[in-house]
Image (cartoon, rainbow, N blue to C red):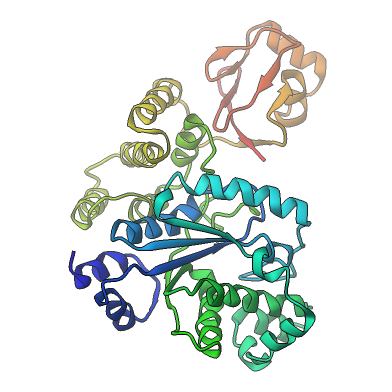
Length: 397
């Protein structure tokens, strides 16, 4: 594919690109570019928010370029302040290491293993002396750091900013120096960190990396960005049933964004979906089913995704459940059915809960629960029905 055609595909749905001309010149050199993504293993699993950038990396790989995945096992101990209103807690070395191992395995559900180089930034950051840190810090100014919106806001509101938070973007930038990144990709909230990387590379005599940022996607709540910290995420390691059910639970307003960023649908197909939605020519639920199949197929194969769709339809669509129902958030994967009714479903007493169960008035996914001693294994999206008219959707915290 010609460099101009590669650029068109690579820049599709981007937020920031510094710069198109720069990236085109690098593509014209017809050599394998080193394309970097840094992730901090704050929790042990990847989610669809990560899939947006990983899919972009996979596209670079399809054009013959080398992906360098930086697992920030060192920087995770600092905590990325991007978009935060307060200092983030630091992870222990043991927590960071365990989470990092999980990250690297999951990334290959999207990335081509043969064209991926995985590096842990503790490899070069752990051995740094205090003198090395001072020398690195001297290459960037406090004034430039305060150009970052969240730092400036916190300073103006007299909220504390740890010096360690200034070191985070410098450490991430130094990663780009070590791996000699030609391009760095990140979510839109990483724009400042990536720009620092350009400056620090130049300070060390390297050509500045091109930076490409992609949109953040909202999570299942439809409000906050998808994040492990907000527990509104759809994980790579979810079961097919859970992944399908979570996608079906997103607000209709998010459907087209998910289609654009998480599937391979063409611009023409997306325009047709938009037209049908605008003209009420398609039921949004049917389009969301297609979306859930597309995304679930990427992780589990089309046959498994279609099986998940069939199960979802048999449980939810054919039972004429209400479109909207209150959620019960459960902290554990299993819970006593009596405890569930009393603690979360407004049943007045344990004796009343037992009476309802004995009378066959409690169902999960239309299966009658008739044993008062039963323990319910919760799956994301299960529906609890009490009597004929009370419905609750079960959600894991």
